[in-house]
Image (cartoon, rainbow, N blue to C red):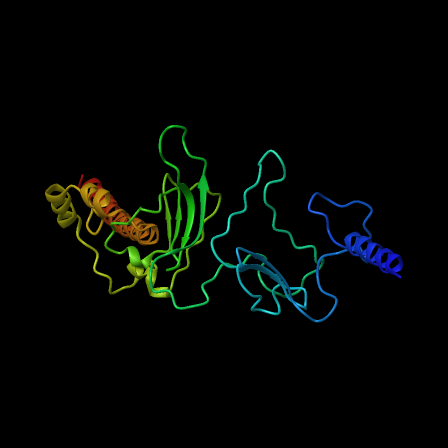
Length: 276
């Protein structure tokens, strides 16, 4: 009887050992029957130092550093996260394999779930640091919580313009593009009002006096003002068009005067010839 009990215990111990995972590795396993996890509607939890670190709930949603909180999200990470890759390989890719998408969420969504009154960032793209220079962060593109976008400037960059709140995009070193279209808010924002009959055109003698005293055209900023405040492209283009239209009116007026003078000269010539 004792031998029988000893044999059963030995077989049971061997069987149980065969069903456990070996800390030094396992071989000959069958995925359908040999696995880590649960077979009922319970969550699977991984812990270290007595604290939960990772959870796979019964629906298959995974959370690291917390508990899955959104049934529509398959993978959640709570806490600071880094994706470190070797650029000699494939780097980090975010891909959507669904074909012919007609509607849905953005492929990449960065947002704050709670009220955020401070100017913290939503996204920053940084270039590699310069060796031995100490500049560990070289942001090249940054989207702030207030909706402003910075390109080619550091996070510490603070615009000093008096009207900075009116602008969304700040770019250092210039922009090169093939096409820019600027919307005009209303028809009275364009300069064609110069051609209206009641428009008061500055006489040329007054214009000459203004230029001699100020060194630039009326309404056009001086060199010092342009350097200090910059120029607004839409306003400047409208202003330049206005000056071209004013110049056109002056040329038309001068042409009328020349024509009248020529007619008067021709009439005087006829009178002189007739009196001979």
